[in-house]
Amino acid sequence: MDRFDAMRTFVQVVDSRSYTRAAAQLSLHKATVSQHVQQLENRLGVRLLTRTTRAVALTDEGLAYHQHACSILQQVEEAEARLRKSASAPAGHLRVNVPVAMGRLLFAPEIRDFLERHPRVTLELDCTDRTVDLVQAGIDCALRGGLLPDSGLSARRVGDLRFALCAAPHYIDRHGLPETPESLVQHHQVGFLLASTGRLRPLTLTRDGRRVEFEVPARLVTTDSAAALRAGLDGLGLIVLAEFVASHHLASGALVRVLPAWQCPSLPLHLVTPTARKRAARVQAFMDWAHALLLRRLGPHLQSAGNG
View 1: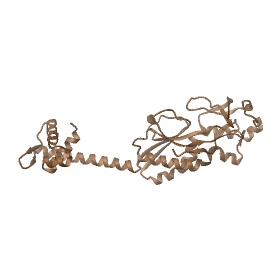
View 2: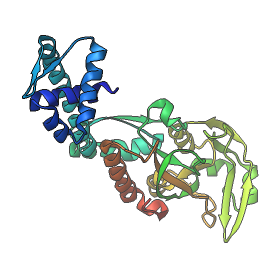
View 3: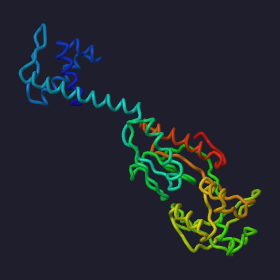
View 4: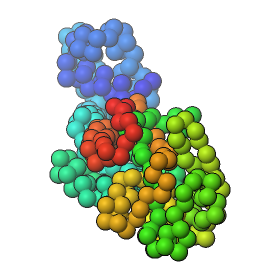
């Protein structure tokens, strides 16, 4: 016996003053209504109703139980109504995970716009270059770069992020400018450890369908993209940067492109959530806002912007 169903049936019988009318209101057979009330009385060990040929009357125990049952059912209805309302209108706490550079350069300067659009949402912005388990960390939405493993995550494609091989002028003054991809092994790089493997990212270039890859030694290795950028600007080695990060420094002359006729492989960019089923309104609202933000701010630096 479902206690809430039995409780609702009992309250409807009392309010209708009839098993027959209660059955019609609940779209149940009269025998089912009678059975629910009897099971409830058996569970409680008291008689709740007395029946006459003309009406249904409450016992003293039934009157007390009816008052409590009405209060409980009202609380349940209010709780369900609040949940339905929050499911249709963005509200509640939202946890978002993005890479460090994206968080600092794109999301942090723009996040006020999202919060002003959705005043009932609070947001926790987690900025890290490490891959986190969304379910275990309680993350509602994350921005991921790279190929996604076959998993239960729901993904929305943003586009393919372009990268550039760069160096600071004073690094070039000391070590010279590489003239061919093969000469890269005579240099050193600011190394970035891949979160997926924990290994140093090889330096890969493509041109006209040709792909070359070199293990360029690194004097400095880091897992933090902000630290890698600072090291590159300080002339500690060649560095591969996302174009949206490098563009300002290239324009100012703080960095120069290395082997500009060659391209670094682009990186697929996705907004991901633990599941697409029954996605909360606040999560859907953030995904829509973030997707539009990324296309607007990264448009010139995306190889192809998908709708996802």
